[in-house]
Image 1 (cartoon, helix red, strand yellow):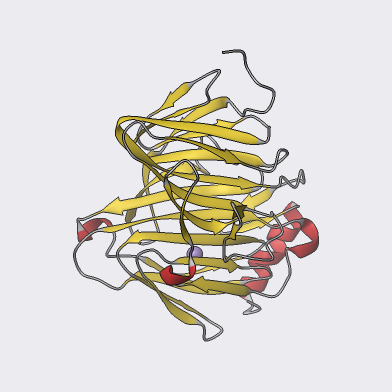
Image 2 (tube, helix red, strand yellow):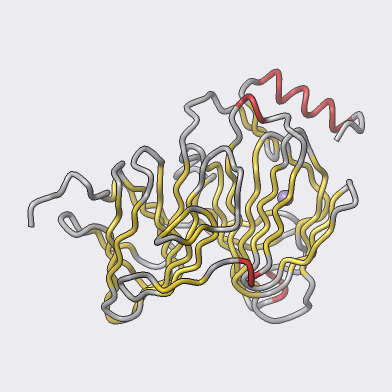
Length: 283
Ligand code: MN
């Protein structure tokens, strides 16, 4: 088959690297490590998955964020969220928390279980310079508010952000105009998804293996991320074992990124200001 100009292909494959963060939580870092420091507007992607409480029980005690958004999507397990402005909530299986840190919050993310499986993703999405100091905002989305659709090709898909086949995800008003779906492909299933042509996009395979592209197919194995070329759609297909993937796209900001731990600004001076503001209780 001749390549079609409409199809996105794989430009790069990245494997999640085992590491730990917070108070010893073991996880796989896919974006935000040495291999793929960022994929504008995405700054970090972690998959945390373990049924050994030693791997997650320490949680993420109080820490700051400024200048971007953190997105937590839970597949299994429960995490309790609380911040220094009195907000709190329970992240339960199938829920999403889209937190716009903006000018700054201090928060904690702690397991609300002593055993059993903890499984989910945290994605960091940048804010453009004009919005880095915006007021903090939460979109806490329970599982029932995330549409589960069957695509015309017959595949189950949860739409967290973006619009597909007349269904819109509940996350709204985000600067990066994100698309975020969780797609399940049964044995031999195929799917074609439309994505905004100029958005940067990736496919992350969290179960099984998936082939990306029809004309120039690339097999993406378990716990691997495919960075996609530009274009209006992406084709996916599963082998005999099926696959589960998240497909995420966002508008690149093309701005300088200055990063220091939980602060992501545009300049070194803004980072120093963030450190000073934190030290002096201005978060
Ligand atoms: Mn955090």
